[in-house]
Length: 513
Ligand code: ATP
Image (cartoon, rainbow, N blue to C red; front, side, top):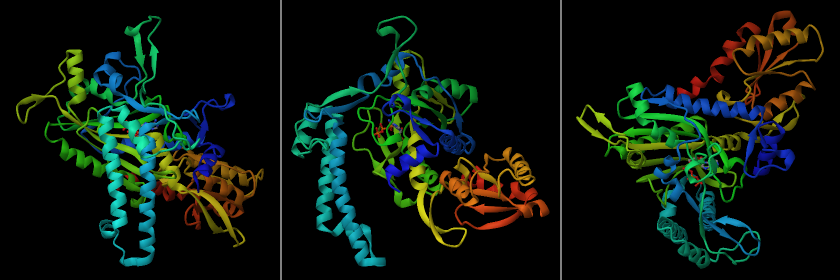
């Protein structure tokens, strides 16, 4: 299914709506509908449980969106949380200069991937992709060119050389996708933080920011958490919460929003041990994504070409979204930058006494940071499929099905009486619904033909449908239909909860980790 279909499906079935739609919407802000909120909550719960429940040395926290303005001075966001901005003078369209260059590089990468796909077709099972990439001259040349451009851009961004960025765009002859012209303005830095005012006091003293990341709430609480929980290093603090960024260009649906949600975990370690934990968390986070059934070919690591001001190592887990491989999660080794900065600016010690080595130090931090909304989009993109299946008469028909892992699907079981308004059939179906609803999120639906109701449940990813028919009145059994295999079996009403419980439980996912 293409991206447009995904967006319209999300709206039609109550997953995602444009914010303030009746006023023509607010750019890059979205609302989650009745199905969306369930799916999003399940994603959050799975992340939370895999961090906080499965690790004795990770604890949770929920900090305020507003923080003392000094926080953002210390963290470097006031001075350095910028993106390079460029306008095309003909189309008047605004772009992120680095994304224009990345788009150029991506086109080269697509050519490489085409060559690889062709070769794979030609050589079949014997094909060795790594060897092909290492020996095919055309691929080597293209790869060298890509690496060279990304390396140069990384250096320019690190040096904040905006003239250099413009020169690079001109050298690569990048044209505006809208107007086709190369008539560009200079590149300028643009700060991504939203600001507002505290109370009725005006002036810079009372200027507040909407947090652009949740991490700082964890850093400033480092000692509160450590002391109140008596955690010993290494330990982590996890948080899920809203973050806000005034993105220059916000396209691609919920991939890039101005208000979004992050799931972040800061892991505090002994200085010098950060690289070990950095590698460990990279592997753990990849395993988390794979546990949700995401195919390995759709995930890859990408080392940062430009390190943020706080990092000494950083990699993204990229997912193959419908518009290409893009960042889904970041794993960053943030050194002792943040804690040291807060210590300096607040004048309060943020140190840990390590009884094992009898020393006090400012801990180093390895963080994992994933956007909940991006994860949502990745899950939808993975799951939404159109397939041909036999209908009730055994004829081929197409269905749109959302093959979400059962544990994160919004609705677990749909209860469907064979006919509507038909006592005592509907009475019994209501009883079944009441029996199941305290165990699982269920839906009761008696409108339309049964086939149509199945399709509706397929479209929202419901793993099980329970049909109550006339036999049910006789023998207390119902038909249980599996979303993926389409197999149906008779199950006694009293056995339904046990029959379904395991496969829709989050434990099945957590056990894979
Ligand atoms: P990008 O390069 O795509 O702007 P980033 O490197 O600035 O992302 P981080 O600061 O590492 O992102 O944020 C951590 C995670 O938060 C990202 O991996 C992403 O999943 C999510 N995220 C960041 N910005 C947005 C946004 N505007 N909308 C939705 N999710 C976002």
